[in-house]
Image (cartoon, rainbow, N blue to C red):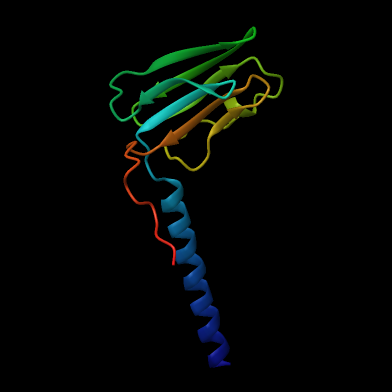
Length: 124
């Protein structure tokens, strides 16, 4: 009985630590927002240097997306697409998930400092 309790507690601790690590990874801050229209880069914004909020309007074939930028974060404020999934995604500040407006073909990605020479990981 005591042996089972030990393994249950150990499993619980592992689950809690894994959850905390995953949350920390998902909240990593990014420095640059890259805005793509039809797969082509149209705008680059350093979100860590933004001092006052501003909006960017992206027009694509009669469709309009409005992007809002604040210090350290970015979101799709409005879009005239039929589903509005990109707007409901809300603010992003880490490079884990991009904002994608598939009907209007607009994508916002976040990346770090832009230093491509840095090593992300080494796998053996």
